[in-house]
Length: 354
Image: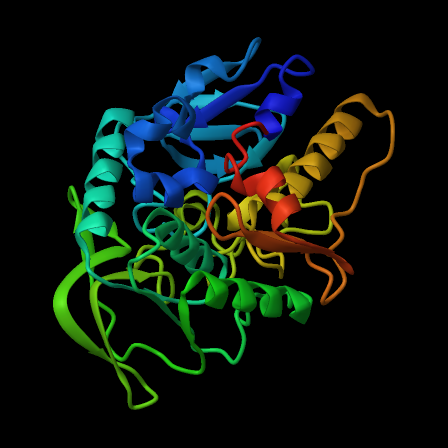
């Protein structure tokens, strides 16, 4: 988003190791319905993203003020650097690092078959990803038993910024109306491990298995979707790129209110890689990008005013959570959104129109 916004206003160089942008909002539906269903929309080639700038396919090895060094030794000079390197890697289907578009689509098709063949499904985690995956599966397979196991006392309770409790209540009512069973205040004692084409997967086949829960109950599920627990054992990419002291103990980049990396003039960071205390969402990443684009232009031209990135007040975080293409709920501040609005904004086409 930042590169696209600055294209034409500056000489932009986008460094990206993948050949295409993965539309993350659509990955859960694509895994349920198959990758080829979204072949044109799921992966957007980077080579057509910028009209005036250029795209360099490669991996950044180090970032210092005024320079990005790539693996292999090439150095790219820059007056301003914006880091959007992400947090700890997500498991497939949200991510499949190192895979081409064709390989990724084939993995999504295989996931579709896994889900279709499973007699019953358990989703571990009642955050946005777990809720949306449960909704996608139930919408595609209305007769398939789907159960969500969540450690908190309410859905979405694990968010860094608490949302309006009415949002959680609305989602719970709709899920139960769809026939999704929700078990709160419980954990799956042993999380299964999944793999697809050599990549860690959140989709785990467990045919005929019974899974012990922390509340003393057991749950039989032929397939488990793990939307809770560790994302990856590897550190966030920024840790290896930046000087010691610029990331915190969790590997997040330390930034000031203007989203500039602490102690690094002209270097900014946005998205999942920053230590901003908020739930990591595409919506907030977009807001951060707007702030940084403004600040880069202001600093470069001397015109206008630098902006601080402001968190939404506690309990006012914005979020849209879908339950398949037709249902879901959302909240922006005190404003509650029902299925009709959420479906039209996000659920119907998982934001392909954005």
